[in-house]
Amino acid sequence: MKKVGIAIAATLLLNATFTLFLFEGLKESLHSELSEQASNPKVRLASYEHGSPAINSKPSGSFYIPEDFVETANTVTQAVVNITVTSRSATEPSSGGSGVIVSPDGYIITNNHVIDGGGKVEVSLNNKRTYKAKVVGKDPYTDLALLKIEADGLQPLVYANSDNVQVGEWVLAVGNPFNLTSTVTAGIVSAKGRNINILQGMYSIESFIQTDAVVNPGNSGGALVNMKGELVGINAAIMSETGAYEGYSFAIPSNLVRKIMADLKEFGIAQRALLGVRIKDVDNEIAADFNLGNVEGVLVRTVDPGSGAEEAGLQMNDIIIGVNGTKTASVPALQEQIARFRPGDTVALDIIRNGRKIRKDDVTLRGMSEED
Picture 1 (cartoon, rainbow, N blue to C red):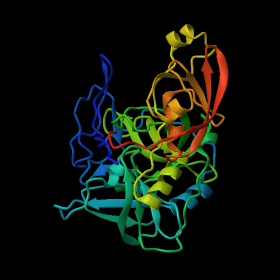
Picture 2: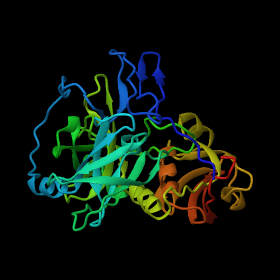
Picture 3: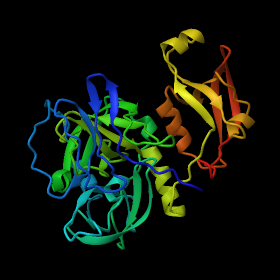
Picture 4: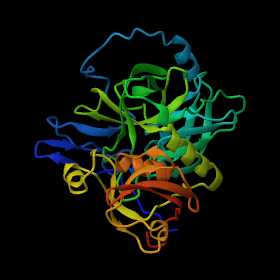
Protein backbone atom coordinates (compact mmCIF):
# COMPACT_ATOMS: atom_id res chain seq x y z
CA MET A 1 0.00 0.00 0.00
CA LYS A 2 1.39 3.36 -0.93
CA LYS A 3 0.88 5.80 1.91
CA VAL A 4 -0.06 9.37 1.23
CA GLY A 5 2.32 11.69 3.06
CA ILE A 6 0.75 14.25 5.31
CA ALA A 7 2.38 17.58 6.12
CA ILE A 8 0.58 19.16 9.04
CA ALA A 9 1.49 22.59 7.79
CA ALA A 10 -1.28 24.33 5.84
CA THR A 11 -2.19 28.02 5.86
CA LEU A 12 -5.96 28.28 5.77
CA LEU A 13 -7.74 31.34 4.41
CA LEU A 14 -11.16 31.56 6.06
CA ASN A 15 -11.89 35.02 4.65
CA ALA A 16 -10.03 38.13 3.59
CA THR A 17 -9.18 39.10 7.17
CA PHE A 18 -9.21 35.83 9.12
CA THR A 19 -6.26 33.49 8.58
CA LEU A 20 -5.34 30.36 10.48
CA PHE A 21 -1.66 29.44 10.63
CA LEU A 22 -0.27 26.03 11.56
CA PHE A 23 3.14 24.80 12.53
CA GLU A 24 5.17 24.56 9.30
CA GLY A 25 6.61 21.24 8.28
CA LEU A 26 5.69 19.13 11.33
CA LYS A 27 6.25 15.99 9.29
CA GLU A 28 9.92 16.91 8.97
CA SER A 29 10.54 18.36 12.40
CA LEU A 30 8.86 19.76 15.46
CA HIS A 31 11.51 22.49 15.43
CA SER A 32 9.52 24.39 12.80
CA GLU A 33 8.91 28.04 13.52
CA LEU A 34 5.43 29.51 13.66
CA SER A 35 4.32 32.06 11.10
CA GLU A 36 4.10 35.35 12.89
CA GLN A 37 1.07 37.50 12.24
CA ALA A 38 -0.04 38.77 15.60
CA SER A 39 -3.23 40.27 14.23
CA ASN A 40 -4.62 36.97 12.96
CA PRO A 41 -5.89 33.95 14.94
CA LYS A 42 -3.96 30.70 14.48
CA VAL A 43 -4.72 27.05 14.89
CA ARG A 44 -1.81 25.38 16.63
CA LEU A 45 -0.90 21.86 17.59
CA ALA A 46 -0.72 21.69 21.36
CA SER A 47 2.81 20.34 21.75
CA TYR A 48 5.79 22.32 22.95
CA GLU A 49 9.35 22.89 21.83
CA HIS A 50 12.23 22.87 24.30
CA GLY A 51 12.84 26.38 25.53
CA SER A 52 9.27 27.58 24.96
CA PRO A 53 8.70 31.00 26.52
CA ALA A 54 6.92 31.30 29.82
CA ILE A 55 3.18 31.79 29.78
CA ASN A 56 2.67 35.41 28.86
CA SER A 57 -1.03 35.64 28.17
CA LYS A 58 -4.18 34.99 30.11
CA PRO A 59 -7.34 33.20 28.98
CA SER A 60 -9.85 35.53 27.39
CA GLY A 61 -12.36 34.89 30.14
CA SER A 62 -12.97 33.06 33.39
CA PHE A 63 -15.93 31.40 35.03
CA TYR A 64 -16.96 29.77 38.29
CA ILE A 65 -17.15 25.96 38.30
CA PRO A 66 -19.65 24.73 40.88
CA GLU A 67 -18.59 21.07 40.64
CA ASP A 68 -16.15 19.15 42.82
CA PHE A 69 -13.76 17.48 40.37
CA VAL A 70 -11.26 16.18 42.95
CA GLU A 71 -12.01 12.47 42.65
CA THR A 72 -12.01 12.51 38.85
CA ALA A 73 -8.80 14.55 38.72
CA ASN A 74 -7.02 12.21 41.14
CA THR A 75 -7.93 9.19 39.02
CA VAL A 76 -7.06 10.66 35.64
CA THR A 77 -3.70 12.19 36.57
CA GLN A 78 -2.41 8.69 37.39
CA ALA A 79 -3.01 7.67 33.76
CA VAL A 80 -1.59 10.74 31.98
CA VAL A 81 2.15 10.80 31.23
CA ASN A 82 4.72 13.37 30.19
CA ILE A 83 6.56 12.70 26.91
CA THR A 84 9.89 14.16 25.86
CA VAL A 85 11.53 13.57 22.49
CA THR A 86 15.23 14.05 21.87
CA SER A 87 16.09 14.60 18.23
CA ARG A 88 18.75 12.41 16.65
CA SER A 89 21.10 15.38 16.31
CA ALA A 90 20.64 16.89 19.76
CA THR A 91 21.37 15.99 23.35
CA GLU A 92 18.66 18.15 24.91
CA PRO A 93 14.94 17.30 24.79
CA SER A 94 13.69 19.02 21.65
CA SER A 95 9.94 18.60 21.89
CA GLY A 96 7.29 17.00 23.97
CA GLY A 97 3.72 16.60 25.00
CA SER A 98 1.45 14.27 26.88
CA GLY A 99 0.16 10.73 26.60
CA VAL A 100 -2.56 8.51 28.04
CA ILE A 101 -2.06 5.02 29.48
CA VAL A 102 -4.64 2.65 27.96
CA SER A 103 -3.44 -0.73 29.27
CA PRO A 104 -1.87 -1.98 32.52
CA ASP A 105 1.12 -3.35 30.57
CA GLY A 106 2.30 -0.03 29.18
CA TYR A 107 0.51 0.94 25.97
CA ILE A 108 0.22 4.72 25.69
CA ILE A 109 -1.68 6.96 23.27
CA THR A 110 -0.30 10.28 22.09
CA ASN A 111 -0.43 12.52 19.03
CA ASN A 112 1.61 11.72 15.95
CA HIS A 113 2.93 15.27 15.86
CA VAL A 114 4.37 14.88 19.36
CA ILE A 115 6.74 12.07 18.36
CA ASP A 116 6.98 12.34 14.56
CA GLY A 117 10.46 13.16 13.34
CA GLY A 118 12.02 12.64 16.75
CA GLY A 119 14.69 10.26 17.95
CA LYS A 120 14.62 8.96 21.52
CA VAL A 121 11.19 8.99 23.19
CA GLU A 122 11.03 9.08 26.97
CA VAL A 123 7.92 8.74 29.14
CA SER A 124 7.57 10.02 32.71
CA LEU A 125 4.70 8.72 34.81
CA ASN A 126 2.81 10.72 37.40
CA ASN A 127 4.88 9.00 40.11
CA LYS A 128 8.04 10.39 38.39
CA ARG A 129 9.25 7.00 37.17
CA THR A 130 10.83 7.36 33.73
CA TYR A 131 10.90 4.84 30.87
CA LYS A 132 12.24 4.64 27.36
CA ALA A 133 9.34 4.19 24.95
CA LYS A 134 9.04 2.27 21.70
CA VAL A 135 6.92 3.74 18.90
CA VAL A 136 4.56 0.87 18.01
CA GLY A 137 2.89 2.75 15.17
CA LYS A 138 1.62 6.13 14.05
CA ASP A 139 -1.09 7.46 11.79
CA PRO A 140 -0.72 10.98 10.34
CA TYR A 141 -4.24 10.80 8.88
CA THR A 142 -5.72 11.08 12.39
CA ASP A 143 -2.64 12.53 14.18
CA LEU A 144 -2.44 9.55 16.56
CA ALA A 145 0.45 7.36 17.68
CA LEU A 146 0.87 4.36 19.98
CA LEU A 147 3.83 3.94 22.34
CA LYS A 148 4.88 1.01 24.53
CA ILE A 149 6.91 1.04 27.72
CA GLU A 150 8.12 -2.00 29.67
CA ALA A 151 5.99 -1.66 32.79
CA ASP A 152 3.20 -3.56 34.54
CA GLY A 153 0.43 -2.73 36.94
CA LEU A 154 -0.25 0.67 35.44
CA GLN A 155 -3.56 2.45 35.88
CA PRO A 156 -5.20 2.92 32.46
CA LEU A 157 -8.15 5.07 31.48
CA VAL A 158 -11.38 3.50 30.26
CA TYR A 159 -12.77 4.62 26.92
CA ALA A 160 -16.08 6.46 26.89
CA ASN A 161 -18.47 6.28 23.96
CA SER A 162 -17.75 9.65 22.36
CA ASP A 163 -21.02 9.45 20.40
CA ASN A 164 -22.79 10.00 23.71
CA VAL A 165 -20.86 13.16 24.60
CA GLN A 166 -23.22 16.13 24.72
CA VAL A 167 -22.59 19.80 23.97
CA GLY A 168 -22.62 21.57 27.33
CA GLU A 169 -21.28 18.55 29.23
CA TRP A 170 -18.51 19.11 31.77
CA VAL A 171 -15.08 17.75 30.81
CA LEU A 172 -11.55 17.85 32.24
CA ALA A 173 -8.36 18.26 30.21
CA VAL A 174 -5.28 16.64 31.77
CA GLY A 175 -1.74 17.04 30.46
CA ASN A 176 1.61 18.79 30.78
CA PRO A 177 1.30 22.34 29.40
CA PHE A 178 4.63 24.16 29.16
CA ASN A 179 6.13 21.05 30.80
CA LEU A 180 4.07 21.69 33.96
CA THR A 181 3.29 18.07 34.76
CA SER A 182 -0.10 16.69 35.82
CA THR A 183 -2.11 19.85 35.14
CA VAL A 184 -5.91 19.61 35.27
CA THR A 185 -8.32 22.14 33.75
CA ALA A 186 -12.10 22.11 33.42
CA GLY A 187 -14.59 23.28 30.84
CA ILE A 188 -17.53 22.16 28.76
CA VAL A 189 -17.97 20.55 25.38
CA SER A 190 -18.50 23.49 23.03
CA ALA A 191 -19.15 21.61 19.76
CA LYS A 192 -18.74 18.22 18.09
CA GLY A 193 -17.70 17.14 14.61
CA ARG A 194 -15.48 20.19 14.15
CA ASN A 195 -13.22 20.31 11.08
CA ILE A 196 -10.44 22.90 11.46
CA ASN A 197 -8.31 21.81 8.48
CA ILE A 198 -5.22 21.14 10.56
CA LEU A 199 -4.44 17.81 8.89
CA GLN A 200 -3.68 17.81 5.20
CA GLY A 201 -4.51 15.25 2.52
CA MET A 202 -7.72 13.84 1.12
CA TYR A 203 -7.69 10.87 3.51
CA SER A 204 -7.26 12.82 6.73
CA ILE A 205 -10.00 12.58 9.34
CA GLU A 206 -11.07 15.60 11.35
CA SER A 207 -14.14 15.42 13.55
CA PHE A 208 -12.87 17.12 16.67
CA ILE A 209 -14.62 17.63 19.98
CA GLN A 210 -14.29 21.35 20.72
CA THR A 211 -14.04 22.45 24.35
CA ASP A 212 -13.21 25.52 26.39
CA ALA A 213 -11.10 23.53 28.86
CA VAL A 214 -7.70 25.25 28.99
CA VAL A 215 -5.18 23.53 26.70
CA ASN A 216 -1.70 24.88 25.99
CA PRO A 217 1.49 23.73 24.25
CA GLY A 218 2.46 20.47 25.96
CA ASN A 219 -1.15 19.26 26.32
CA SER A 220 -1.02 17.45 22.97
CA GLY A 221 -1.70 13.75 23.46
CA GLY A 222 -3.27 14.32 26.87
CA ALA A 223 -6.67 13.23 28.08
CA LEU A 224 -10.08 14.82 27.74
CA VAL A 225 -12.37 13.02 30.19
CA ASN A 226 -15.94 13.13 31.39
CA MET A 227 -16.97 13.39 35.03
CA LYS A 228 -16.72 9.60 35.41
CA GLY A 229 -13.04 9.83 34.51
CA GLU A 230 -13.61 8.08 31.18
CA LEU A 231 -11.58 9.06 28.12
CA VAL A 232 -13.73 11.00 25.65
CA GLY A 233 -10.89 12.40 23.54
CA ILE A 234 -7.18 13.03 22.99
CA ASN A 235 -6.29 16.73 23.10
CA ALA A 236 -4.56 17.81 19.89
CA ALA A 237 -4.85 21.51 18.99
CA ILE A 238 -5.78 25.02 20.03
CA MET A 239 -6.85 28.15 18.17
CA SER A 240 -4.77 31.10 19.27
CA GLU A 241 -3.20 34.40 18.28
CA THR A 242 -0.35 34.09 20.78
CA GLY A 243 0.38 30.35 20.86
CA ALA A 244 -1.27 30.05 24.28
CA TYR A 245 -4.87 29.19 25.12
CA GLU A 246 -7.52 31.74 24.19
CA GLY A 247 -10.74 29.78 24.51
CA TYR A 248 -10.77 27.08 21.85
CA SER A 249 -9.26 23.60 22.11
CA PHE A 250 -9.84 20.45 20.07
CA ALA A 251 -9.72 16.74 20.88
CA ILE A 252 -9.85 13.59 18.75
CA PRO A 253 -12.99 11.61 19.77
CA SER A 254 -12.41 8.43 21.76
CA ASN A 255 -14.34 6.12 19.43
CA LEU A 256 -11.94 6.95 16.61
CA VAL A 257 -8.96 6.77 18.97
CA ARG A 258 -9.92 3.28 20.13
CA LYS A 259 -10.13 1.94 16.57
CA ILE A 260 -6.83 3.47 15.46
CA MET A 261 -5.07 2.20 18.61
CA ALA A 262 -6.33 -1.34 17.93
CA ASP A 263 -4.98 -1.11 14.36
CA LEU A 264 -1.59 0.21 15.43
CA LYS A 265 -1.24 -2.45 18.10
CA GLU A 266 -2.13 -5.30 15.73
CA PHE A 267 -0.66 -4.11 12.42
CA GLY A 268 1.65 -1.18 13.15
CA ILE A 269 -0.36 1.01 10.75
CA ALA A 270 -3.97 2.13 10.60
CA GLN A 271 -6.31 0.02 8.47
CA ARG A 272 -8.17 2.70 6.55
CA ALA A 273 -11.54 1.78 5.06
CA LEU A 274 -12.98 3.81 2.19
CA LEU A 275 -16.56 4.12 1.05
CA GLY A 276 -15.54 5.20 -2.46
CA VAL A 277 -17.43 8.46 -2.98
CA ARG A 278 -16.57 12.14 -3.44
CA ILE A 279 -18.74 14.17 -1.11
CA LYS A 280 -19.65 17.63 0.17
CA ASP A 281 -21.78 19.07 2.95
CA VAL A 282 -25.41 19.84 2.26
CA ASP A 283 -25.83 23.63 2.30
CA ASN A 284 -28.83 25.94 1.87
CA GLU A 285 -28.64 25.77 -1.91
CA ILE A 286 -28.42 21.98 -2.02
CA ALA A 287 -31.23 21.65 0.53
CA ALA A 288 -33.44 23.87 -1.62
CA ASP A 289 -32.56 22.05 -4.85
CA PHE A 290 -33.39 18.66 -3.34
CA ASN A 291 -36.39 19.85 -1.31
CA LEU A 292 -34.84 18.78 1.98
CA GLY A 293 -36.51 19.66 5.24
CA ASN A 294 -33.19 20.20 7.02
CA VAL A 295 -29.85 21.64 5.93
CA GLU A 296 -27.85 18.58 6.92
CA GLY A 297 -26.44 15.44 5.38
CA VAL A 298 -23.71 14.67 2.87
CA LEU A 299 -24.18 14.97 -0.89
CA VAL A 300 -22.58 12.31 -3.10
CA ARG A 301 -20.89 14.18 -5.96
CA THR A 302 -19.34 11.15 -7.69
CA VAL A 303 -19.03 7.41 -7.08
CA ASP A 304 -15.64 5.79 -7.64
CA PRO A 305 -15.60 2.96 -10.19
CA GLY A 306 -15.03 -0.42 -8.59
CA SER A 307 -15.76 0.88 -5.09
CA GLY A 308 -18.02 -0.64 -2.49
CA ALA A 309 -20.35 2.30 -2.97
CA GLU A 310 -20.73 1.53 -6.69
CA GLU A 311 -21.23 -2.15 -5.98
CA ALA A 312 -23.98 -1.31 -3.49
CA GLY A 313 -25.74 0.95 -5.99
CA LEU A 314 -25.02 4.39 -4.60
CA GLN A 315 -25.56 7.13 -7.14
CA MET A 316 -24.50 10.70 -7.77
CA ASN A 317 -26.80 13.11 -5.89
CA ASP A 318 -27.66 10.60 -3.19
CA ILE A 319 -27.64 12.28 0.21
CA ILE A 320 -26.14 10.18 3.01
CA ILE A 321 -27.79 10.91 6.35
CA GLY A 322 -26.68 7.96 8.49
CA VAL A 323 -24.28 5.03 8.99
CA ASN A 324 -25.59 1.99 10.86
CA GLY A 325 -28.36 4.13 12.32
CA THR A 326 -26.01 6.90 13.52
CA LYS A 327 -26.84 10.31 12.09
CA THR A 328 -24.24 11.87 9.78
CA ALA A 329 -25.18 15.52 9.41
CA SER A 330 -21.85 16.63 7.93
CA VAL A 331 -18.77 15.42 6.06
CA PRO A 332 -16.65 15.16 9.26
CA ALA A 333 -19.36 13.09 10.93
CA LEU A 334 -19.56 10.69 7.96
CA GLN A 335 -15.77 10.41 7.67
CA GLU A 336 -15.42 9.65 11.37
CA GLN A 337 -18.05 6.92 11.23
CA ILE A 338 -16.46 5.21 8.20
CA ALA A 339 -12.97 5.54 9.71
CA ARG A 340 -14.02 3.31 12.61
CA PHE A 341 -14.16 0.31 10.27
CA ARG A 342 -11.56 -1.76 8.47
CA PRO A 343 -11.39 -2.74 4.79
CA GLY A 344 -13.78 -5.61 4.17
CA ASP A 345 -16.27 -4.52 6.83
CA THR A 346 -19.83 -3.81 5.77
CA VAL A 347 -22.04 -0.91 6.83
CA ALA A 348 -25.65 0.14 6.30
CA LEU A 349 -26.21 3.60 4.83
CA ASP A 350 -29.34 5.70 5.24
CA ILE A 351 -29.75 7.95 2.21
CA ILE A 352 -32.23 10.27 0.58
CA ARG A 353 -32.77 9.70 -3.14
CA ASN A 354 -35.33 11.64 -5.15
CA GLY A 355 -37.00 12.82 -1.97
CA ARG A 356 -37.37 9.33 -0.48
CA LYS A 357 -35.48 7.82 2.42
CA ILE A 358 -33.99 4.44 1.64
CA ARG A 359 -31.41 2.14 3.21
CA LYS A 360 -28.48 0.45 1.52
CA ASP A 361 -27.50 -2.58 3.57
CA ASP A 362 -24.19 -4.45 3.39
CA VAL A 363 -22.10 -1.75 1.73
CA THR A 364 -18.60 -3.26 1.65
CA LEU A 365 -15.75 -0.89 2.46
CA ARG A 366 -12.50 -1.12 0.49
CA GLY A 367 -8.91 -0.32 1.41
CA MET A 368 -6.65 2.26 -0.21
CA SER A 369 -5.23 1.06 -3.53
CA GLU A 370 -1.62 1.34 -4.67
CA GLU A 371 -2.61 4.45 -6.63
CA ASP A 372 -4.05 6.25 -3.62
